[in-house]
Length: 195
Image (tube, rainbow, N blue to C red; front, side, top):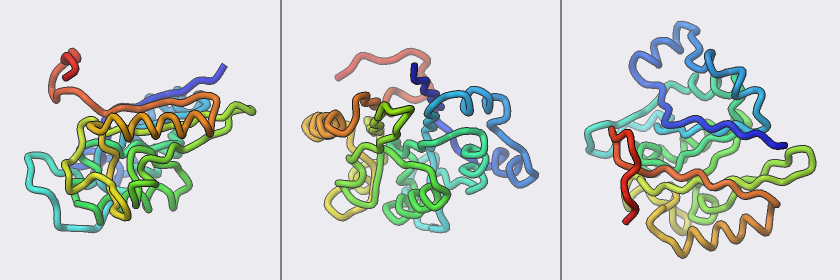
C-alpha cells in the first residue's frame, strides 16, 4: 500500500509568521501524519518572495520562508502552487516561490517557470511504484499569472485540452497519477455544481 497525505490551503502570514519567527511549528499537530505517509502534499496558497509589486485584490499573501522549512521538517515532500495566491506577486513572485521550494529539495506541482514546466508531472518512486503528481489551478490568479511559453505561472484549470494532455503524459511516466485540483467557492462548506 502507498499512503499519501494532503494538506489544504496554507500560508504563513501575520500571526503565523510571528509564530514561526518565535520558533513555533504550525505543523506540529499533524507532523506524525505527514511523516508517516509515503508522500505528503501541501497546497501552498501564498508567494514566498522579496518582490513588492503585487496584484490589486482583497487578499495578497507573501509568507515567511520558515513556513517551507517547518513543513519539510514535518514531512511535506511536494508543494502545490496551482492556486489563486501563488501569483499574488506576479510572475517574478512565482519564480521566487519555486526557487524557495526547490532550493530546499522539495518538489513543486501546479506551476513552473514555463508552460511546459508547470504542466509536467513530478514523479516520486515509492518502493518501486512510480507516482506522478499534477497540480491544477481551477481557481487561479488570472491570465497574468498563468504559465505559458517561457512565462512563469500556474496551471490553468479552465483548459480541458491541456489538462487531458498533461494527464496522458503523466500516465506514460508513472503507474499511478494523482491530480490535485484547487477549486471551489471561498467560504463555502459544500462543493458547488460544476459549470
